[in-house]
Length: 235
Image 1 (cartoon, rainbow, N blue to C red):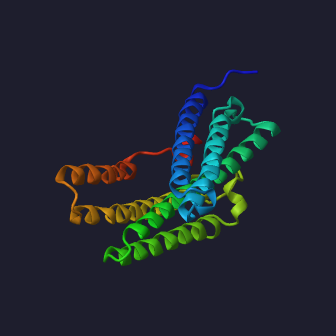
Image 2 (image 1 turned 135 degrees about the vertical axis):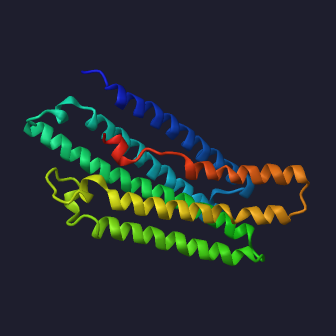
Image 3 (image 1 turned 135 degrees about the horizontal axis):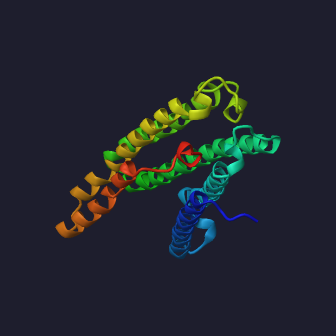
C-alpha cells in the first residue's frame, strides 16, 4: 500500500482535527441544552438542526478527503490516462460536486441556527423585523445559489464531472463561486449587525458589553478567513 501524498495527508490532518472540534462543540451544546431543558424531547428547532449539521459536516470532511486523495494520485496526472485513471478522475469530479453541496447545506444550516437564536433574543424589540428580513434573504440566497448551480451554470448537470465538458464553468465553478461568495458574505455581515445593538442598549456593565460585543465581532474573522474551496483541494 503506497504512502499517502503529503498534500492529501495535510488535508486529512487539518480536516479531521476540525471535524473533531466541530463535533465536540455540537455535542457540548446539545448536552448543555438537555441539562437546561430537562428532557431530550424539549429540544428546539435549532438544536435539531445542529444534529443535522453534524451529518452534513461529516459529508464535507469525507468528501474533501476523497477529493484530496484523487487529485494527489500520480495516475491522474499522466499524459495518456488509462481507463482506471479516467474512472478515478470522474470519481474525483463527483466528489468535488458532492463536497460543494455538503458545504453549502452546512453553511446555510448554521445561518438558520443563528437566526433562530436571534429570533428568540429579539422578541418584542424593533430588531425582530430585521431578523425576519435577514432570514428571508438567507433563504432566498440559498435557493438562488442552488438553482443557478444545478440548472444554469453548467448544463446538463452531468457535465460537472465529465472530463471533456466544453463549458469551463463545469470544471472551474467560476460563476458559482463568485455568486456563493457574495451571498454568503453579505448574509454574514447582515447577521453580525443584529445582536450588537441589543447588547449596546442593555444595562450590562461596560466591561461586559465590550466583552460580549467582542465575541460577536469575532464572526468577522469568519468572513475574512480564507477557506478551502473545491478548486483548491482539487488542485
